[in-house]
Length: 379
Image 1: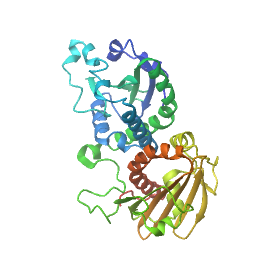
Image 2 (image 1 turned 30 degrees about the horizontal axis):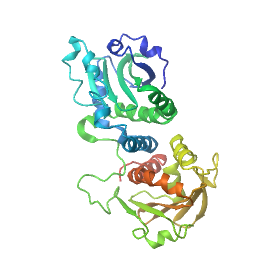
Image 3 (image 1 turned 45 degrees about the horizontal axis):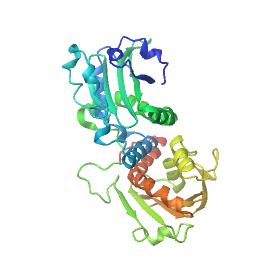
Image 4 (image 1 turned 30 degrees about the vertical axis):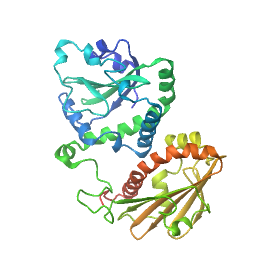
């Protein structure tokens, strides 16, 4: 839940003396039912056990993957851009009574690095070519006799470009990243005993250690290129000669129709991240609102007993999404035709992110279908 700035500035946090030249960007609260005044270390341990951005929702993972891809292409995150290079570490400002503290056994959210950690607050920092960021976590009593976790994000943008960058990403932080973080961290608190015992993240369709990489529930096979994708799948596309094709197939015990799978993957209407990618970057013309004839704005063009085809197009590319479900396997195939050179220019870098996220998208869809039916989420 988003909070006013005073929820951070009115508290006697030690971070204030270290960040006078930083700007307070966001303040967010995370519920911790039943938490007491001494449970801050337990909360941090639960967050570490729950994992970082890789365990968040697909929309948030896509934004992170897109950001790291852009950073790599534009040189935002090189060795000379970080803490101790472009900017000095805040640990240089830490007073003597905090200097000997290590910041805990590990970062709550990599790639942030520890600044300090005490009984009721901690701080971690990150720097790149755009901004120097501090994430402050504090443990605060509530009116219900419990405690909650509060996160404050403080920033020092790197010139005008850094200010423009922070303004551009603000809607995605508030509408996608922080809500996903809220679900992850609040679930981590609820599941802390199992997580701390090595149970890992909440069970999904991910195969257990030692399982066969192919054929076991949760396994995902991938194929890229027209020679690798089966001809029977290519025949379902409306594009006779697509320039780009891939297919990812999940082995699963979940039984659902192709449309149910498609809606579990993409939703009835596109998320903020999906609108940003599909409409903003790729220019795809998507339908608005919910409809039995669309999935996340994509038109349901054709279907069969075990498959469904979604279509969308822009001025420079035409896309098909093919979902097929049969015999304990569900597949997502993507077919793209470049109608102009700009289509290839845009999709080539984005396709790398797409291929990285597709296996998780399928597994999350399986968990979502099970959850809607009130079933267990393990294979």
